[in-house]
Image 1 (cartoon, helix red, strand yellow):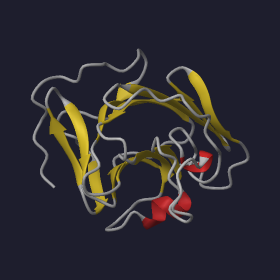
Image 2 (tube, one colour):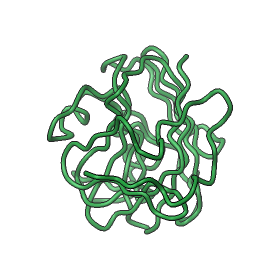
Image 3 (cartoon, one colour):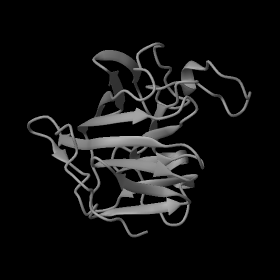
Length: 199
């Protein structure tokens, strides 16, 4: 996938001490599966198509804090921030099975029951592993902020300044890649920065 540089700088710079992985040329990012991400004015990265993952192949990370600015554009938009993923090829399957996903889906849609309102599938949840507190997301079209801490076997998620979810004694890999999800055609989730600080 060819990605042109953004038309203007992203609006919200990452916090001091963090390195933004979303450089203008998106050096080091690759697509696994369908869909992808594209720069949109005024310098935001937007998902399209899917299912697939846009993963940062240049580095793996052990313990870290990840600061992510994102927003949805439609009520049924769906995405996720993946952590500690193995290297990927043409499918996101290994990341789903072996990594961790911090969910973005304000419906809390459970694909098995086909019902909404599942805390394990709600924005801020460590997908299927640690439930999210409800009501922490801003309305559609407004920016949200994840602060995700991965330390040893614990994954904690803060959403818009409030504790959202915490997974302790995780049994998956303690090192891996970071990725963003393009979930389905018509879903358009935008990101302003994906900034990391090793611990």
